Length: 207
Image (cartoon, rainbow, N blue to C red; front, side, top):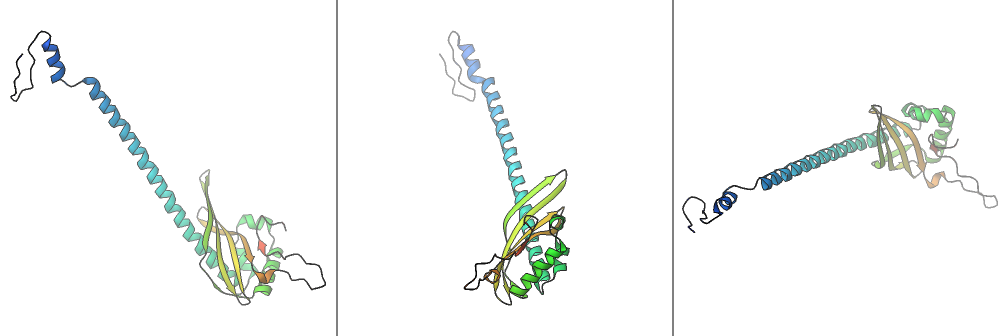
């Protein structure tokens, strides 16, 4: 057996050596194919991960943009409606879902009650989104965001919850709810407790 440590690969010299030399010098075709298959799989997985990451980033941006628009719409709407209280302003900013269930007369009664119990709006803290729902049906996009804030009125504070809905980018008010100790009914000492007055307006409310 002879071994050459020069620039050429070592060669074996004995019966059957040519076949072994051929295997040593030439890489396995099976190994090469396996390596290529692994790289193809890894490439596909990488493309999928990049796609998922991009979709998630796009959804996050869309949600952030919608939250900013909804909270601004809620703040602008409350100040327009309650400084001073105007039923027509609430009606004009409400969407079709609200108007199909709540009448103008009910809206006027609600606004009159809020105006009487709370007084005019002075300031309102920043609205914060508490829930978001984004849907796309037959190419029509709908985004529903519930926003909450503490409002400061002439006679005291209250928690304001507004359900804002965007249909193809156009925002509308679907529900307004105000919670405050000033709105709670106080019974006379000898009288039975009276019902809490309705201080919300929404399609879900039973009017």
